[in-house]
Image (cartoon, rainbow, N blue to C red; front, side, top):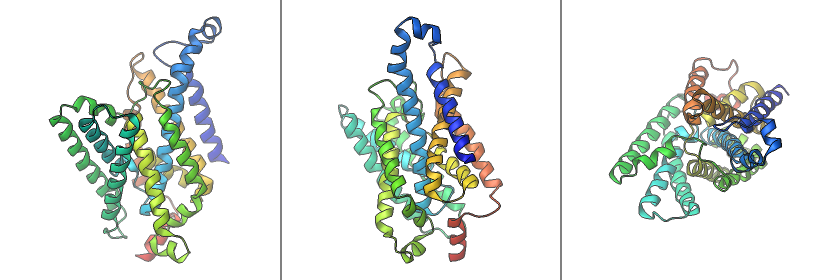
Length: 327
């Protein structure tokens, strides 16, 4: 109950503030006296707020799914190569087919993100189970190599400035008609909730989940598709926002435990609320200019990541306990 109340409080405060904070002042008097205020809400503020909510919620859900697939609490798509490989696919399709539609770009980003996530999964399966901190280190190194490759290709093809819009996740360009692709992430979150119990069993490890009767490979494939699609859609629409899928699921897990069906809605709401708060801070700090939400959340997320590393929970999670026993 406390987790629900806290998540709803952050979310409600952020939504109200997001509608009235921006380069153009929007007060109640102007809204009632002229139609400009209503037009601003419908064209810019409401679409932007919805885009932030969908992005934060879906990245948090994608993070917890990836953690269940890898059976490790310290990974998430944007720091484990999924976001970088999605940007690689987007860059290649932009160079090879400059007139490609946004749908075709999303398909290319999704395919590369899926392949990149599969490569990461193959690498971490070769790591010793009794050293879980090696997994995020490999993910960061892998993502860094892919990002360097993407930057090199962008430099050689004169697309470096274009590339920055994908690696600096921000919402200033979101308008009506330019965010609707993100509703696909809402559908994916519903699918994830419907199979939350299977993902929870998946987090116990391959051998345990198979012994419990889970169709391991089918659920892994479903999880990879969900993670890849969410990564691709968010990169295509708003860019890369790191640490959301890493810190939010861990914080919720410490408060509410590992009942995934119970914690998944709270995780989505808290992810949406924290990304919305980061976007609001970016609008306020240098008003009327903006700092990208990815910059704000990257700073806060890195600090929270260090806190998670240096102050582990008193009782290990179910997945970690099972992993230690199997080791």
